[in-house]
Image 1 (cartoon, rainbow, N blue to C red):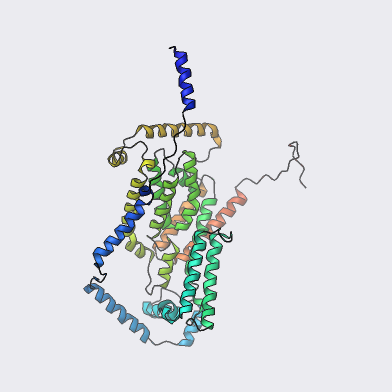
Image 2: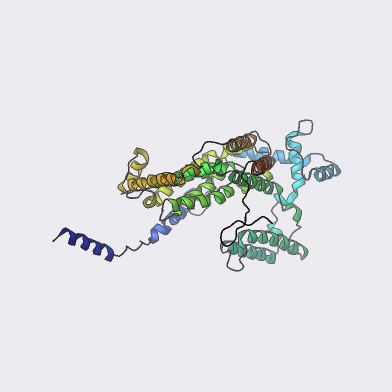
Length: 461
């Protein structure tokens, strides 16, 4: 048989070969981790509480002392003399219960706690669920359940999206509570105290800060951070995304990090021709939730807890109490991600032990080497095509340096215990002014020239 005939035969065989069908995930691969997690939770609770659930451990001496001190302090607060008229004027003038940092002459922490209790009232601290009628309880449950269904399927009934559904659900519950009160099916209700302003102020300030950090400059701080996430090795790319998401969500807020970097992660997957982007998106989502638990500014729930707490909790104090749980959750999450998505993150690997060798000894499979060669070839071709127009590899401009300074001062103010809402709004306002000044005096003016059908510029009107 001639060589020419052999080549032609191989071409025909290659053309006739059908692409292999994608392997469907098995039931255990799809639902196994969730089933193991549920079984683990049931097993731990069964071990701790016993078969009947009554094996509740007794309180330790420290817990008993803490409870006793808390009761004494509560009784002291309730017995303090106060002037209702003066409190009313103070609350109206400050739109709240005043400064957190009272001097000893003004009563210190005890007076601050008393004011907070008087201002928030019993609505926040007393369970009134037993004061609803059966109709009130069931109707509230049905409304709550329906809005959760709408949140899970936002375009099922009306395509108004999750933000509109969340706002509509909150307003509907406020109105329904008012109706229940007037019809005698629910307890007294003060709608004014439902809205707690501190989480809203913090959300506004952090969103303002992150948006102007992102939009200020092409090739700036956020673009450099985006470029640092890319890597030719799949597991390293996933690890970088998890690290960035954990730190970023603790510093600014998990919602901002996920909103801004979801598109970045998808772009990285498209750039590297990744067949399954789910491991990388889950790396972003899971670590954003875990990292946000570290600080009071990590998510709105944390600032809500801090704003409703009797005692003032500092930013560093909150972080110091949460650092161990966050580290433990991060380690568990990383292990689960690398084990469950081992085939995507370690292509060509034969199993767990080889994965460990890849991570800790720098070993490479032939598939990983091919990915690295393709990555560097694409990078070289892209740099050659971009030429001088590529700004991503340029040094730090004055605007990028100013961004870093603002972020550092932003975190220092948090650590010093300054009000997180005021600090975040001030940082966002400073970045907004900087971005506006840069756009007006330094950025090239937009070209508004209009052209005719033949491509000739038209004279300005």
